[in-house]
Length: 65
Image (cartoon, rainbow, N blue to C red; front, side, top):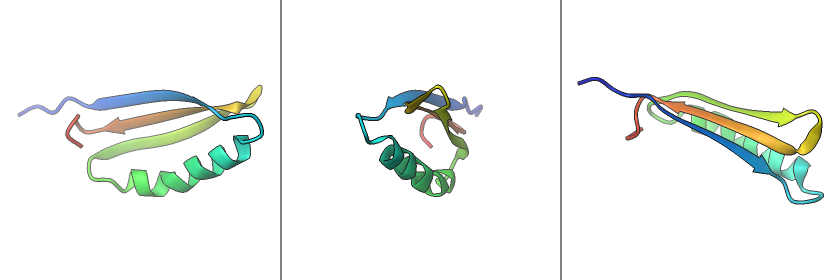
């Protein structure tokens, strides 16, 4: 059986004045999400030009993971 990797990319926009809270939440989630069975990648990036924007990039071994 061949596994097809499952990838999710999301752009998140913090509410006005909440960028630091959203960043802290996402950074705090990272180790837990990376520890999930089947996780290959879980990264979050902030946009230096727009502090309220974050990009979430997830990759799992398959959709079931």
